[in-house]
Each structure stands twice: as C-alpha cells, then as structure tokens.
Length: 344
Ligand SMILES: O=C(O)CCC(=O)C(=O)O
Ligand SMILES: [Fe+2]
Image (tube, rainbow, N blue to C red; front, side, top):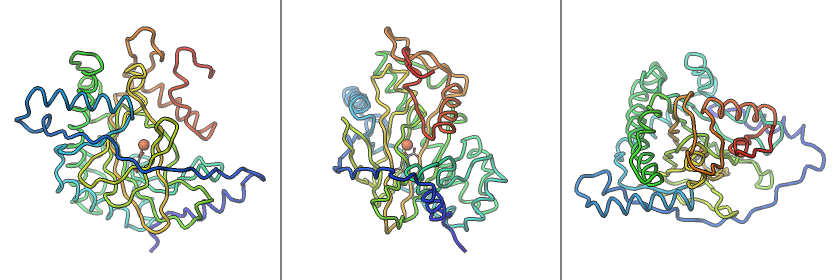
C-alpha cells in the first residue's frame, strides 16, 4: 500500500505546464546558524530569582526583534510527551494514502493536505503532507479515534502543554513591548482558537536544480508558532538580514517564531520573518507546529503613533490571505495592511 501522496505525479503535471524559458532559481548559499538559545528554567520552574527571570524575558524580546526566531530549552514539555507525540505522528502518516484522504471526510474539512492544491508552477509545489487540526478537534479527540486511541491522547497532551507555553511566552513578549502586563492574549487567544499542524516531508528524488521546496517560503499568519522539529533531519531555513540560514536541529529545544499578527500588534518591533523547508533526497522529516491565534473577530492594532499597520480583524486577514493565494498563487501578507498600502 502506498503511503506517500502522489507528489511525483503533481510534479510531472506541473512540468508540462512549465512556461518556456522559465528561469531556474539561482542556487543560494546557505549558512548554518545557531538560533538564539534561551533557557526558560527561571520562568517555568520555581526557584529562579527576579533578576534571572527578567534576563530571560529580555533575551526573548531581543531575539524576537533581531531574528523573529529563537529556541527554548527547559520549556516544560517533557521528553516523554514529545516522544509520544512524534511516535503517534509517524503512525498517522504511515497509513496508506487513501486512508489519510479519508480522515478528511470524517473530520473537519481540510484536515489532511498534501502538495499545494493551488500550485500553478513548479516552484509552488510543496513536497510535503500535513494534518491540519483545529484545537477544538484536538480536545474533543474525535480525530484518530478509530485508527488508534493513544494517538489522540498523545496529540492532546502535547497540544495542551504547548498551548500553555505559547500563552506564557506571548504574555511575556507583550509585557516587554508594552512595559506593563496585558491580558490581551488571555482575552483573545484561547486554545480553542489555535491549531496544530503535523508535517511530513517525504524524501524528494528531484535534483536540486528542480528547486522543489518541502514548504514554500512563507511567514506564519498567527501571533506566534511553537515548532517541534525533527531532532535529526534539518531542513528549516530562515531569512535574516537578506541572507538565508539553515537551522541546526537541537533535540532538547523547541523553536518559537513570531507571526504576522505579533509584528502588526507590536508595530513592527517583533519580526515575522520568512522561512521555508528544503527537501532531503534520502530521508523523510517530521515536524509539528502549534499556531497561537486569536478568535476571528479579534482586532489587531498596535495603539502606537505613528502606526505602520491599519487596524484589521483576524478574520479579514485570513480572508485576504486566502484570496491572494487563490488569485496570485501566493500570500501577500502584512504589506496589504500598512496604512499606506499600495495594494487595492
Ligand atoms: O517543518 C518545519 O520545520 C517548519 C514548518 C512551518 O514553517 C509551518 O508549518 O508553518
Ligand atoms: Fe511556518
């Protein structure tokens, strides 16, 4: 039974439509980087001094301004929770492709995704598959029940623990930006408005010149993302100061990255940076992302003068992203929402 989605066929179909003389993407030089590594021990475990806690918060805010990305250790998500989550994730993906497609029918629409349904040219094809699960479905445990009961409980345990961490980190970053505590995230980002995505990147046999990505360059459309990436297989790359860097896997760490909404809310102080996943010719790769999002009607504004972005609701943002992806084949993102937006 075939477990991989028909990515080769999607590739061939797109190849047929390849425009003549479509320029090949230039090969980029990518350096490996160590993301800022922040030890959350003083914040998560009791016993840290006020000074240690403050230092930790300051490091987080600085990394969010300079990199838009950082890694955390001693984050409170135990190795057992991470291991169980990954084992069950692997199991879910090892089902036959036809079975995975069916998950979609008995679950919220759009749960299982592969490739890029909207791709019109080769370099829009994502060489990956994903289960995209709203937290409302995670906690009601409806998803994989008849496949494997322990799968849903492993996912639920992971998701609820990471949800707590996301709420804590967002609160700290808000406090550092505003200079005072804020209940904005408690009021607007309940776990029920967030979602989880399990990704699998099958080995990709295409030559590097084909420039097929595991996941297209993108920014995340949320406040922040907590990413549990593969502890062995790298592939995540991010842009810093116009250069591309490969993130080295660190088995103890979770990765945190700032999304578009936090960039707008902080008036551009915290950066939502472009990132992507490159394919690997020989081995598969897994990752799990928790997207910390507000309810649809939440208004995003910086309350800062002069404000770079106009006020917008999360619903408006999501709709605009979907419209752009449908029409243009790509997300335009925050540049549509600047006070002087040139897009109509
Ligand atoms: O797989 C990864 O390392 C990154 C995933 C990601 O960027 C996403 O799901 O938005
Ligand atoms: Fe992402």
